[in-house]
Length: 411
Image (cartoon, rainbow, N blue to C red; front, top):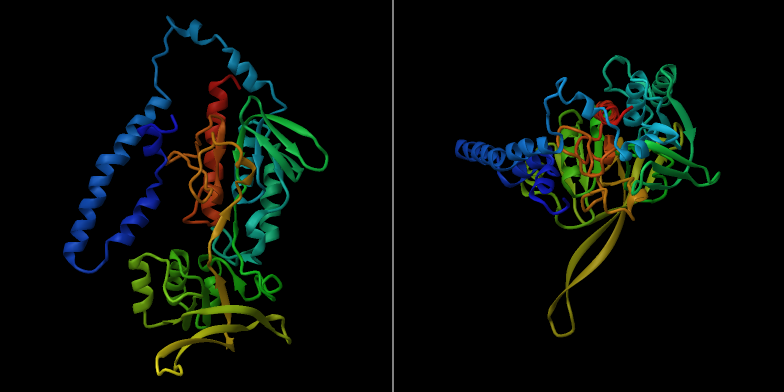
C-alpha cells in the first residue's frame, strides 16, 4: 500500500494543508480571500473527503447476526501471535502524550507498561503556565509526577530504560533495553518519544535554559510581556514565534545568520512589515551571557558580518567582509531553528512511514500509523502545535485507538 493513492491521501495532514495555503495566498484584498476559499473547498473535494471515505476500506463495517456469529468467534492464528506477549500495550515515552496514554489505557484495563528515560522536552521548561486547570501554572516536574501517579493509580507500570531497539517487523512486537539487555514483548505499541529542539550549542545556552533561554513562545512568551525578546532563526517557526511575541512584548528582534529568510513569503512579509519587530541580518550568536546577580539571561554576544566596499590597485570596486562583535542586551531569547523528531529507533524499518524530517505519518483524525497495532502520539507526529495539551490529547486518542484494535483481536 506504500505507493497507493489511498496511502498518499491519508498521509496528508490537514493542518499542513492550512499552512500551505496560508503561505502561498497573501491575505490582503477580498479577491484573495475568495480565491483562498475556493482553493480550500476544491482541495477538500478532491483529496480530503475522498481519502476520508476510502479510509473506511481499512475498517469495513459488517452486519452481525445469529446466522454468522459463530463464524466470527473463530480466532485466527495471527491473533494468537498478537496476544502471546508480555504486555498488551507498551508506551514508549514519559511526557504528556505517553502519560496521558497510560492513564487512558490503564483505566481500560490494558495494564500498560510505560518505558522512558525522563519526562521529555517538557522538562526543559521551568513551569507550564497554559495547561487548563492550573490557574497559577504548575511546575513541570510536579506536573509529570502528578500524571505518573495518576496512571499508576489505575494500574500502569513504569520501567526506566534506555531503549536499544524496537522490532515492529514481527508479532508480538519487541523492545530491547540497552544496559540490562532485557527484551519485552507487546501486542501493541504507542510511540510517544517526542521531538528534540535544535540548539546553537554555544556557551551559556544550556546553562540559561528556562532562565531567559527558551524554545516555545506559545509556552513562555507571556513572561516577556512589556519586555524585549529576541527570536533566533529564519524559518516559518521563527516567524510565527516573533509574531506571537510581538502581541505582548515591548520589542522583538529577529536574529538571523543569513541575508534572507527561509520562511514562506507570507510569513516573512508579515514579520518585515510589523512595526514592533526588528531584524538583525547576517548575525550569529556567539554566547548567552548571564547577569551575575541573579543568573538570569542579560545579553548576547553577537557577531555580525558587515560588507564594505573598497578599491583595489586598479581602481576596481571590491567587497570586503568584516566580522564585528557586539553585546546585545535582551530580556529573553527564543531559539527557533527547528526540531528533530525522536524516531531514530525506527530508522532501519521502512514499514513505519515517516516524512522527510522523520515525523511519523498518521491517518488524519487518528493516531493510526502505517503499521497495524502501532500508534503515534504527541510531538513525534506533530510538527505544528507541539504543546503539552495537544500532546496529552493525542496520547488519549492513541490509547483509545490501541484499545479498540486489541479488542478486535481478542483482548
